[in-house]
Length: 274
Image (cartoon, rainbow, N blue to C red):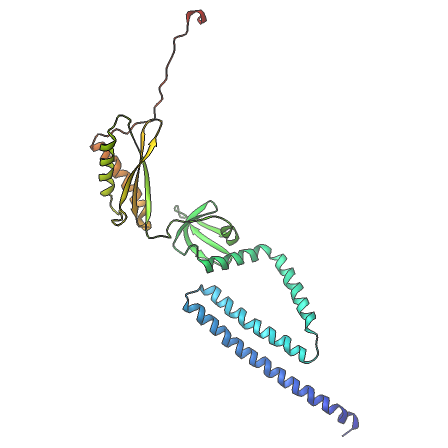
């Protein structure tokens, strides 16, 4: 064996051992990464976490481990990994600036799916838009309006706005304003309104209803009929309450005044006449 090769043998053996060790480490990192991905996925599924986010977090955990293992293996050969970290950091910054809006929507989507201010099927009002939640995505959320329009809202807009969830609770209150004439007997008017509210179909028996005297209007004394119901039949109860109140007031001859204006004409003195 030539002397040059004999001199290189220790180094070749050393590098050969390192290469075998690195390949073994990378193989193990892939196996462990796959195990961690399954572990994360199973844990999040048991908690009924969002399916899209479950897959994302599982894959993220796997590739973070594999990337760390590869960088560690590069250090075995004396390669300076800090430069790679700097390059990755610069690339991440550039990508972040280029996709700033998209990433903000993604971050907002993660927050919506994590904190759950609303769920699919809830009726919400957000950023001056309202409708039934049809889909919650990582970047956008879809709402179906009452007139059957599909609204696509960026998640960043939603998370930055006030969210009014109409169907979060098991019951919701229907408020109907009613005016009766100043000449009407208030006790009789309250009795009539109370009987009408009690007979509304769909009224929640546990929470019942209330008849509230609001105050004085320009042409009428203002009552408010408040009927509790299941949010799923809110508009049905709204309609039924108006019908019941109108029929009850008419049947008991409780007057509902129209807005009116009294005009007083003063006689002009003759000296100002023609």
